[in-house]
Image (tube, rainbow, N blue to C red):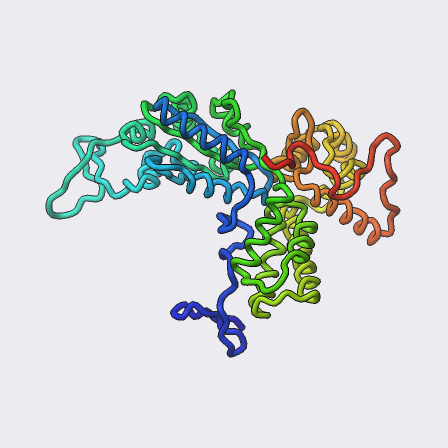
Length: 418
């Protein structure tokens, strides 16, 4: 049984005290202490900030990627790298239309505001003694226009602007106006909105009036390069795991299994750090085998989470639709819809296809679509074969007009490191 001991920063395990495992609480989410890669994106964004300062303007920069692509870690890196005098402010979607939300994000939530009421004036947050009030700021545009420093607003999970955080009525008009002013550099000062989300993020912004994103300001985030993947694993093993001896075999094996996908790297590194901690940094062959086994289970759990909200029959139907498509290869919407329509009809087929996009299982790949995580494509196929075996049904027969790619051997344009 585990019990925390916060005073000494230890964990008690069966009466023995051990240091807590390295890494963040949610190991495969949020910022990372060992960031490598994405150099092209970081360079382009640095140039954008320089131009914004020089022209005293700004714009929007949007990053789209499947779950686990490392969007949040990249946002933290971009915000942390922003040079002075940029002020970095992380906002929630509501800050685009709600003045109070924006004021709190800017650390101005405790200021007194005078608000008009029927028959007079009331002072919000009134306290006894001397009171200093400030004029009411009518909307988010007014708040930002009073700001003195260059402002970098960072919005994560931005796809929710078309879902749970979708503005309605007057809020929608306010958000549209604010986004238009920022996007067109009309705030009277350098203001940049850096947003990241799933593959529906750009559509969410388009629904709020941003019909065209600036040149090099629309990024599709995919897999890391092999070099970056190995550098990340090496940093974790040596700096946090304090590994002793040659790490080459461990780095290579974990890199191969992770398919250069950030979430998968975390799935293997986390048990690797636990092993190194338990064995005082020693790397053993049996330890590597166990780490790889646990990493595979972590990846499978990740895939299961991605499809959890779908009916099992729908997942298997989708797996059948992509079974003959090479791993990482693009496919057309029509190819998937034809399979769905056979079972459900046109209306539900469209809805189901859209849901797979919204959950990041399918992503637009130029004029076609793809499964942005090649290893998940492979997992879907294996799940379908297992499903057929359990039901005593024959496996799907290859279609004569479709090519079958090898697992992990092909990359779509969406999956290249940017």
